[in-house]
Length: 611
Image 1 (cartoon, rainbow, N blue to C red):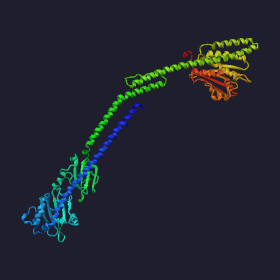
Image 2 (cartoon, helix red, strand yellow):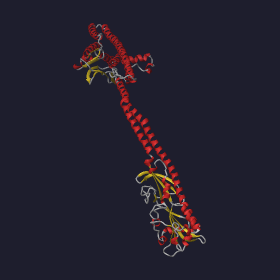
Image 3 (tube, rainbow, N blue to C red):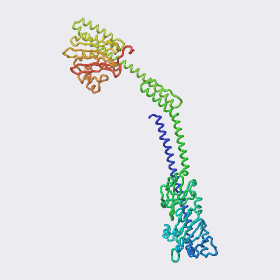
Image 4 (tube, one colour):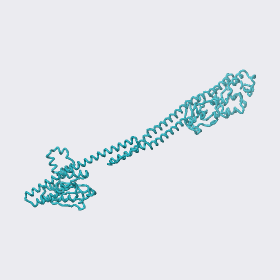
């Protein structure tokens, strides 16, 4: 991954992702806080509403308790003409004291809409005694009421009031959204059931409780409902959901237990918070339904601004990456590219700096460093060339005295035997060899090297005429190839002096050359005594000094090893290594009794290419 991607990834992971996580976290925390705060307010509001509703119901309970205690309802049932017991229209002077007191009590509670009694003792069909009449309302006949399931429930309550919500029993209470109390009336002396009282309060009294209620600033999006245990909406102050079932509107449950609970769900197609509080003494639950959209308007606005800010940050990051970061990473990439060129050996590479900031200083420093490195490399190269030339001169100086010593020793031997003609020929051959060896040129064509070698071989055959014969197999087209002078002669000398030492048969020496790809391969083969394996192992150190364990064997042992492998052989190997590099040199293949093959590998090129 390049630097640009790393910076972009770091910006994303260290800035954008934390900002998104922070925004999401704050959104969730705020939503939870809003929901929690709303639930608290909803619980207080529903408790207050339930208290007010229960208070209204308790007041009506007190009124009817007073009527029973003062025998007002008993007197109405015992009257000669029960149909004329309407306390709302009767003459005040015709009422007795208990009736007048009860009538005054009723006027203190003007929210009572109507009241009537079912006479349980009468066998006549008309068993309904009116207390407060109501227009456009027809009470359920007693015979139908007697078979109604509610009748048995009233009997079992034994005088305890039973409150009915709107729409629960419309055949008994009508279709208006009003609450109705039904209770059993007893004769106080014998506690005999003599009637059933039905009292209905006006709609406006319950509406007044909800009219000025406010949970939060979003009260216009809050609906209050009264539901029974089956989830039926029995009262809606707004009149929208009367008669609907909560489950049909999307609520998760159709039954609501005691106490307070709140859930966030879908209601009538909108995400809402539904809170419910169960009235303590009644089988109803107060429910508030508030739109979540209204509650979370501020949170959604905050989330929207957060998204806008994050998008602006992303845009700023893209612009920053496009202009500033691209410039920085681009300059760094250019420096890396030039460093790779330098790593490949191009010390002439220079970075063109732009601007006046640190990147320009870095480019200048890089160029100055390359200038210094280039100067150091030129100095090292010059010193290495001088060192290589010195080593070549030293090795050349080693070969010349070594060769001259052996040749002069041969001439001296011939002179002692009185062979003057051979001495003269050997001196002539030696002169030809010296003429080549004293040239200033270090590299000569292969043809000249072969002529030099032939002169040497003829000199050696004067000394050892019966010891060996030689063969030359050099293709003419290779005569123009260039090599270091005095390359073949030390190899041939090694074979004559060491390979044919002590043999009882005629030695054969074969010198050949061939081209292999871009290499020139020179071979010197003999059928001599060969080289033992332990001696071959020592040739591994020809390019370097012998290892320390060999040096520890003593000067006499080291001298013996050096003599056995040949001073000329080592010199040739070192000269090739210095001139052409470590990939070139000599390779020896030998075994005792099978002769020796020495291959010399050097680059293949001619005089024009060398120049």
